[in-house]
Image: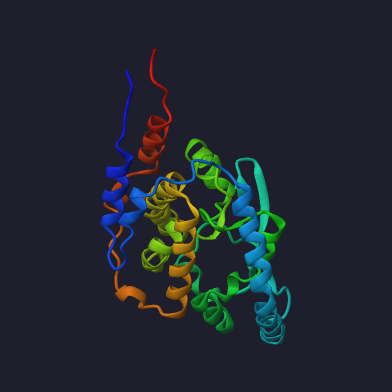
Length: 272
């Protein structure tokens, strides 16, 4: 028996449930048909990163000096993340929190006390992400793609991430642009480690994975440029396109196991 899914209809349903941004056209995008880092995508990443480093190198230098004065060393936070199943790398960010050797897992309200004054500004403006331009030049990341996950998530849901991480992790992405603010609101209500982990696994992760899989099916230069533009405008103008409190894709209530099941069904071959 062959299990068939109408992905155009499913993707359109998920994307049409979003408020404040019209992303339903992505469900009609055919995509490049190529998985992984294509030559064209890599060339775009390198050229764009080099062009951005010309003006932003001054910003990076100034922020480094300010952090050195206000917080001391280390200036950067190196997060161990996965670029592909079994392939780990160090994701660079400006350090925005007090050091804690026992730190682990997703960030919720229970970690807010560690965020420094400078860190709050850097996070709000996304300037803390600027060092990831060097991750892009190294080939660890792309401008657009799924956010790089921690090893524990990849090991817990290997089959889902085997599909998601066919695309190089990105500084921004469809899930980041659409879901980031809503995820922040969910995690801000989590005051314990247990509540944070539960909320992330049950509410945030399934929705982000579904959006990452939509991006994988619909990826194209047009989609990438649209995501970059809207991410930039959202940073510069938080109420861009009238975004207030966002509704999220209707299937947020589903578990990661449901995402796993639909992913496996999508890749089943017809029975002879």
